[in-house]
Every structure is written in C-alpha cells, then in structure tokens.
Image (cartoon, rainbow, N blue to C red; front, side):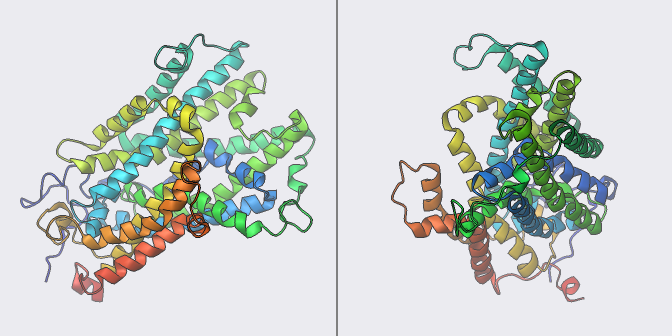
Length: 504
C-alpha cells in the first residue's frame, strides 16, 4: 500500500525528492500562507473581469446580429460554463497547496507535465505583452488629450513606433514590474483594494451617460437580426454556438492555472464561494454596462463607441485624468493576475533549481519586451486574436485530462511527496504518461483544420464544412474527447494514492 503523503504544510523536501522538481515556490503552501478568504477571490475576479477586452465582448455579439439582451445572456452563460472546470481544478490547489504545473504531474507525468505548463505559459506571455502595449497606448492617447495635441514624432528606426509611444510602453511595463518584484501578496492587495473602486466607477459611468444622453439610448430597444423579417432570420444558433465557444475561451487559460491562486485559500468554501460570486455575475453585469454605455454614445456622438479608451478621450477636464487612472489600474490588475502569475509558476516548473516564481515573472516580462507586441499586432492583428481565442482548442483537452485524472482516477487523493520525485508513482517509468499524451493529441486533432481555416483563410480555403462546424465547438470538443480517451486508457491502471482515505 502506498505511503501516506506528507500534509500540505510541508516546507522541506524529503531526501529522495528530486531537486529538479522542487523549489520553495513550487512546494505545497503552508498554513501560514493560506490567507485568501472568499472575498479575496471575489475581488480577484471582479478585478480581472473589469477589463477592456471583457468590456468589448458584447460588441462582437451585437455586431453578429444579437440583441443587447441576447449578448448579455450569452456572456453570462459562457462564464457560468467555464466556472465549472475552474472550481473542479481549483479544488486540488486548495486541498494540497500545489500550483497547476505540479498538479499536472499526476496525469501527464513528472516530465510530461512540462508540456501543458509550457503551453499555458506561451499564451499567457502573448497576452501579457499585448496588454502591456495596450496599457502604454492608453497613457499615450490620454496624455495627448490632456496636452491638447498629439504627442510623439518620427518613428524610431527598427522599432516602427515613435519615442513617446516607446516611453509610455516602458512606463507601463515598469509599473507592472514593481508588482513582480514584490510577489503574490502585493497582487492580492492590489486586486482587493481596487475591486470596490472599479464597481464604484461603473455606477459613476452609468450616471454620467444617463445624465448626458437624457436616457440610455436606442441600442437597448433594437431587436436582434434573427427575428422573422430580420437580416439574419433563422440563423441564431449558427451564430450563438461559435460565440459561446469564444466567450468560454476568454477565461479558458485561468480555468487551467486556477490552482496557482486557490493554493492560498483558507478553505474549500472560500475558493468555491469566492469564485462563484466573482466570475459569472460580474461578467454579465459588465456586458450589460458596456451595452448601456455604448447605447448612450449613439445619442451623444452619433455612433456606437465600444472602445472605453476612445470614449475617455472624448471627455473633458478632470474626467480625462480620472479615466486615465482607472484604466491604468484596471489593466495593471488584470494583466498581473491573468497573465503573470500562471507563466511565472510554469517557467519555474521547467527548471525549479534555476528558476523561482519571481524569476519566472522576470522571464515573462522580458518576453513581453522582446516580442515587440506592437509589431505583432500591426502585421497579424486579426490572426493573433484568432490564435489566442482558438487556443481554447489546446487548453480544453488539457482540462479534460486534469479533471478525469483528479476525480475519476485518483478520487481527489494524491501522494503529494511523490509529485516531487522522478522515481515515484507519477513518473510512469519514464516521466511521461502515454495515456495523457494520446488523449491530448486526439482532443486537439479534430480542431486543427478548422483553426487553420479561421486563422489563415487564404492559405487553407478548402477545409470541409464538417471541420468548420467542429471548430465552432473547439473547447467543448477538446475537453470531451480527451476526457473520454484518458478515462478509457487509465481504467484499471491506477488507483487512488490513499486507498484507505478514499474508502472512508
């Protein structure tokens, strides 16, 4: 019978633990580190939800033909769906105090876990760089408004942006770097203290547009294009399903690495209640806010303005300064929580002896600089967002493997100490679990043709309708296939690490 694991409060490795799999940041959290209550998780999600990309989600749905109410309900439903795997995977973080990169070792193997960790890190680095560029552009745009004239000058050779744009980008990068240096607790405090401010600003914005426009505008009363006689009559479901998949994909990355946060939870109740309160409802309310405010801009400016930076630039006086500060705080808090914490742990898991959590954060920030995100957006703007949202086709299968392994194969029982050994039960002999790799590949394969057609239509124009339809449900298809395949391949091959505890 396998030995019982050490409690999650262990802080020192056993002699037999592999130092290439363990460091202080990847070790299970201690009781003293478990300080996050439910309101910290709720504040974390409110902080991440209140971001510019989430604000503009409703725009794509309304442009696709939905009414305001259909768009808001679609956003809410998608986030209620993605909450389920988030809570399921987050359970392991709280129970054992381990991050996502370590949890993945139970299913993918002590060596194989580097693959899902690296995949999660890559997409997060992409988002981190792009959001940092957006933050710099906010400073650039709003400073120009404050000064009464555009700032800048000639483009710098080799960079393709002017000096003012570069300095604004570096300034925003430096603001975030301060939080990398000061660690997770600084991020928790930022999210906790700014969440109420963001909620207050939402109500202020609602009052402002109502007062200025004398109401909430015509967009709320506009019917969907799918009603009889509409321009897209009878086509609702053909639009709804790909839209729902895209909305689910928006937080699919966090659904994987949520143990990076829940490992600091005081209890399971805290992470369950906090996330349930903090994600679906605020996302739905933000979508409603975006629709209402944009509806009012039709009255104020003669056209729908979905970009909050553009809207802020049209304000005058002290309102511009307030908008600048709120947008900057908003983007910093979102980028750190959503796109910094995950890759920092993931890079650390690649080489724990050499890379700590903080060093992983430095690597993420360095990649954000090196990738020159403005060039990436300038040359492949449509493709990069197709790729980032389409990344759910890769993340879904990983989630399927993790959930089935933790609940069906292990029955939520893990031998924590063996997660840090390369000769233990999670090494699968060579460090790779073939079942996880096969399930992952089979979960991804059906989505590849549809993704290539969506991202590069001119290069892959002859993809069949069947593959396009499958890609419409990319995340759902991936998670379902990988879950079924992994469950079938692991049946009878593994038992819970703690047989007595599982039976009690």
